[in-house]
Figure 1 (cartoon, rainbow, N blue to C red):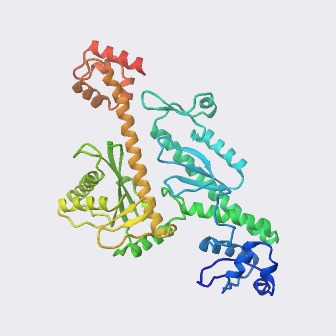
Figure 2 (cartoon, rainbow, N blue to C red; figure 1 turned 45 degrees about the vertical axis):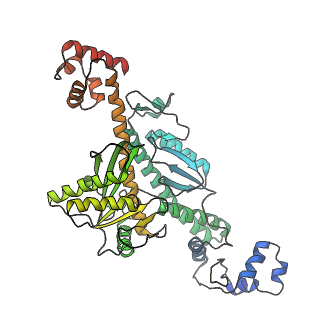
Figure 3 (cartoon, rainbow, N blue to C red; figure 1 turned 120 degrees about the vertical axis):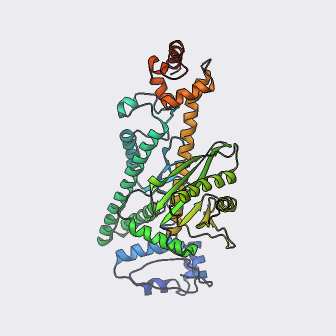
Length: 468
């Protein structure tokens, strides 16, 4: 059904479309309809289109697809998945937890679901906590002096059989495995739901089929739009090719951006400023090409200067090696960050490849030239690829930032040992690599470090054991 402006305001189906459509325009219909919503709909209808399909199951699927696509104001089914539970994992947290929610936000979290059966979902979460040693919403981890974490403060460590304490990096590996498991469960469940829906429709159990269809469309939408970090998936190659072609067209590139690199800056109020660069080849992460940077040229909070430094360092190295530049550079930020990246190429006296910025708030694509900012549809395959690239850069930068903070916190224990100046401290860390190895060293091993005698080594060894 369409209004006078051609806007789709209602989508419906019927075995006999003639009877169904004509029923809206029978004499006196508008006066006898009890629901005000239906009376308002009838007054607005000025035109309609008809699509004929071969079977009722096909009609059921098509109706849901069109409602999802057009979101007519007088259709109340299938418009969102808020009545179903989702699992949310906020990867920006130091220790990401698996939480339940009914609202999917456009943020950097990963979402799984929707799940119609809350009891089954809660049992599944309990299973993955036991299997992978991750935290749920009720977790209360404790930070230990050496920077590691004790996840559980009761007998669950022994019950679950997971090692404690753990470092932030070890815990994130657990989260990755748990997400892969839950992602597989979601896709496995989607296949089962489709089969049940088709079977119910074939048996003419249309109320049950419609309920299943609602879940199928919501689950399929969530899986397609989830900000996954592009793990190995045999169904992805054609999708990657489609996304690359869509990006070429949308960005007016000379060819598909088969190699892309994205930069992100991470800091805590101007301290621990680091940057990360991730590399995608043919739409997939190439982790051998990932790079991370500590900012060297200044101290403080200046994202523009930081971006100029790391872009310059990256592509100066490629020029020295004679390596090719990527087809597309993506900057996490807006026009200021793009300008900083271009300044780096001016300093290198090099012609930059295609560069764009991706501004977070509205997922706006920013160009370095006179072109207006571009907002692609949220389900655009090219935009989804850019989001995966940007989110991976953000994850990689945040992980490095957390690792650096954790390392500095652990090393700061040496400041409390009297008589240990910067030269001896640097010698210790250069010899052992980090504080955990130093803490595990014997008195004799510490004494082997330049500048340490037996007495000082024994005192430091005793100090480290007391503060462990």
